[in-house]
Amino acid sequence: MQDINLFELRAHFNHSNILLCFNGPISRSLIEEIGNALKNYLQADQAQPNAAMDVFSVYIEMTQNIRHYALAHQYDEIDSSATVVVARDGDQHYIVQSGNLVEKPDGQALMARVATLASMDKAELKAAYKTQLRQPRSESSASGAGLGLIDIARKSVHPLSATLTELDNGRCFFSIRAVIQKTS
Image 1 (cartoon, rainbow, N blue to C red):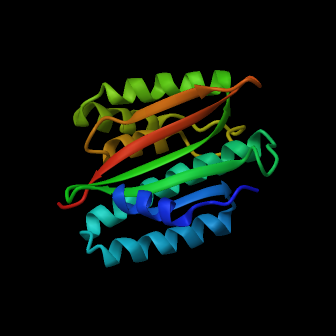
Image 2 (image 1 turned 180 degrees about the horizontal axis):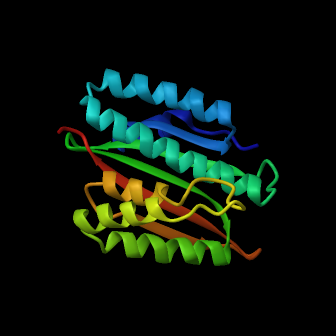
Image 3 (image 1 turned 90 degrees about the horizontal axis):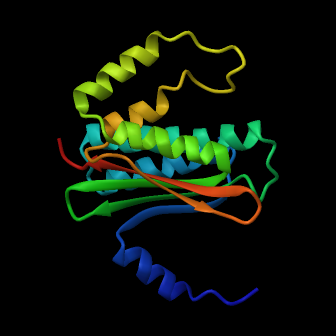
């Protein structure tokens, strides 16, 4: 393994205002432990309670989505890895980003869904949330009722953004970004 220049990595994290960064296989207990660390970082950063709750819930939703997806597709430890970053953007916003491997058709569908949500205003997102809430939940569904992505979009003060990087093996790396207001 090549030596990692931790000083340069630390300088990059500090310059980018990164509060928390994780890369690797993610389990339920790890989601919880990182969530506890995130709560402590937000408290130390004197985040407003509403902002801290929004950042935490967006982090939880993103990481649980990654975990459920990897389990549903029976990915091995390497392929089920998640990359999660929580940072500050000046004094006004928190940025929550996550990424993981997905099958290409799933990634394309996610990009379309994010684009649809990004085009909606707050009233349209609220209506979409209520509509989705009333939809019957599929018994074959491995996770929730499809509300999570809408909820992330509702908490974000800027439209959601996402990228899809194609890989050689028919998979893609999907990354999503939400921006949370730091103060109420």
